[in-house]
Length: 192
Length: 166
Image 1: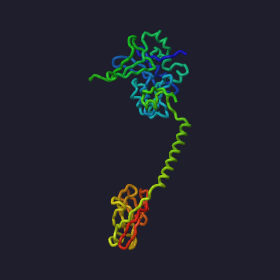
Image 2: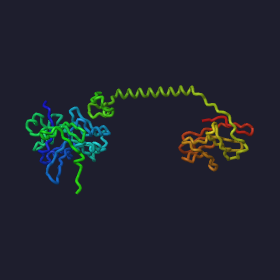
Image 3: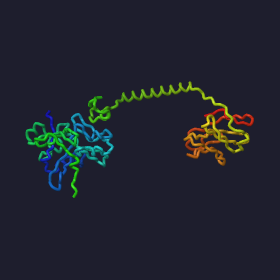
Image 4: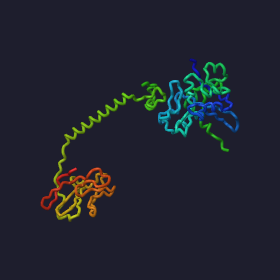
């Protein structure tokens, strides 16, 4: 079987919210999308970025979980919290460098994107990737993405000095190998 | 049990593994083994305590004159210490020819008990534990055991403590 990869290309996102609505259709969390489509800088641009779980090699959410509720499967997919264990403390929500986990207050449980595990584990594509009209979210074999796209897939992020390698790829300019993210710089706002 | 993490990783990250496959479940056999072994350990411990008890030397109390009969009026109290100077005791003359003595330490949290004449009982002011004057038993309150009784003997005009009955 061909190994499929998940690729995010923010430059292709048109902010149509199809992925959000497709995600909310899911049986396991109907009405609550697990995907984020965020405006980057709404004041100046209409650019949007879709954000699914990046499925880190060493998931910070699972490492900070005091209840041992978040587990990574053999195929590298980090699952939603286990209902009998999750205590709803939101540690994972605060710890995730990508801001992915969502605290479901009504359920007192954290839920997050699990790459549509029910679908991908049986050879189907995740909901968001099937509906994305511009394929900003793409679930295709690696050879195909290398063949069809100008951008390069990368899965190494640096948050300060902390390297984070992920299962999901971000499409980056061809001359970039790793994305370095200065969190403090993003948080900084000039005084008005 | 499969161990995915390398040895260089800390113990907590091994015990609370992120990978679902590395989770260490306790099997039924392991659990029953644990139960059997701990209860056997408890049983052996009990036997050991029992054997140790058999060989424990019995405490020998020295006789000690603690009061003169003329000192105490009926319904009055004398404080003394027995068997060691630090062990406070209380003696009560309940009738013309009847004396009782108890350790003054409340069996709850070791506050000093006193004699309440109107109610004719020993009272502990800390948590309102009441003891009977006739035999030191608990009448009310948190104390779990009766007060230890000081065994008294009369020799002429002297009252002599001869031992402590727990």
